[in-house]
Amino acid sequence: MLDNTQDGYVTADGRQIGPVVLELKNITLRFGGVEAIKNISFDIRTGEIRAIIGPNGAGKSSMMNVISGFYVPQEGEIIYKGYKRAKMAPYQVARTGIARTFQNIALFEGMSVLDNIMTGRMNLMKSGFLSQAMWWGKASREEDEHREKVEKVIDFLEIQHIRKTPVARLPYGLKKRVELARALAAEPQILLLDEPMAGMNVEEKEDMSRFILDVNDEFGTTIVLIEHDMGVVMDLSDRVVVMDYGKKIGDGTPDEVRNNQDVIDAYLGVSHDE
Amino acid sequence: MSDTVLFALEAGLNGLTVGIMYSLVALGFVLIFKASGIFNFAQGVMALFAALTLVGFQTGQVPFSHLINAIFGAHVSDFGFTMPAFLAIILTVVVMVLLALLIERLVLKHLVNQEPIILFMATIGLAYFLEGLGDIMWGAEVKRLDVGIPQGMSSWVDETTYNLFGYGFYIDTLSLWALLIAAVLVTGLVVFSQYTKQGRALRAVADDHQAALSVGISLRFIWVLTWSIAGIVALVAGIMWGSKSGVQFSLSLIALKALPVLILGGFTSIPGAIVGGLLIGVGEKLFDFFMQPVIGGATENWFAYMLALVFLLFRPQGLFGERIIERV
Image (cartoon, rainbow over the protein chains, first blue to last red):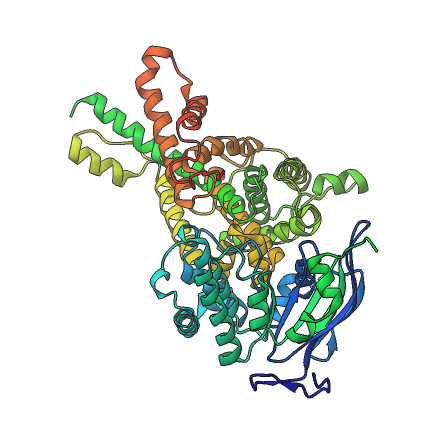
């Protein structure tokens, strides 16, 4: 069982999970008359891998978009690092240390892999445009420092061989990896991954799972992911939120969720004969 | 060398210098189109407005003087001082940046995520608005613009070519300056977009809005930045055209010549805008030179459009534009 005190808990594999970093309280999101998210609350703790699962159309991606600021919920509040988050534009959310990837890859297709990943560090660069023009030396030194960090991310994700390739030429699996690299380059506190393994073959899925675990392990990054592959989700995540038709129907460790009757019904269907 | 070849060469060189003027206008179009996918119909009027404002500042004109006189029965026309060119240019740049800010606040912000055609219509509205504003602010008469760029026949070119071929070419010094300034401008833009943080952000926004947002780039800031740069490019174009043929409202029609330039060079390519402008400038002069005896004069009015039509048939993405590949 989880120890739900503020201090966190220790996972089955012995990792120490910290206090709550992001809390969603009674979130409701509507598109016109359709309620995509109905009064959902859950929390995300520092250092954990938190999965959101559910059948198609359950509202998982909408939830991701709420956290990253692309959607603004009509009701509810988001508590981030102890403070209620004001209404923010997506780029402002990104600046608070929340990086994300997209279900349908959103990369800068015309730019090289390296340039794509460099954009991830945009918010960590200090020199503005005028100071860059006036103190060229200082700015180029800063550029070099960021470049070094980016190279580390590139090594980490094993994409050295495609550094200079324009993204448009890459196969799907590698694009997904570049997108992860760009998100990582921002050194985020929370990393949101929307179906990082969709459309991948078994081998690519194994690679991606390994990267996700390594990122969490090495940088202590809190990870929230949406994934359809149940085997992957149960292996990777520490705690799982289950959604169905915009409602939360389960929340707990993979084992708890697996044995939850509502979750089983949502996935396998319920007989209505009786 | 025979006379015909020499005359053709001279015509071609003059075409080069007219072409660079087209390029300058086209450059403004490309910048905005790349960053936001908006075809800014007002680019030509922006050049006009910038030139009007520059002349206004330089000669110490009172803005809206006609309006003020009509309403209050006053007789103001100018402040009675003149401003050095560089100061007037700096002030005009400030005005163009303010204009960019206002365009974002009042127009673009409210049309986010609309169809491109709607944004295009908005820029047509903007074109008419700016033309009217320029008229009310500074008056409609043709004005002389002189920022100190030397004009008249370049004796250096004349002497050199005379010594070489025994025939002196007539090239306007202003055109040589236009070439130089355009080269500096383009180099500056390329360095900015390739080697600075904001330049990278600009390219990112041009590529994918959603992705740009997710890495923390403010679209609104980038739009203001792009329109400011386009405004400054418009000012440069306005100075060049204004110095050449006076600041007059027909300046805004030059924008139409930029359309074939864009079709030739590609809507998304900065080098394309330059090369396209030069090709059209040289092309129309040479075509006129060789075809005049056969089909009569005034071919310059339509040659560019005909060339654009040929390009649309055989290479719709232009010389440097991105290939249009539709995945099925």
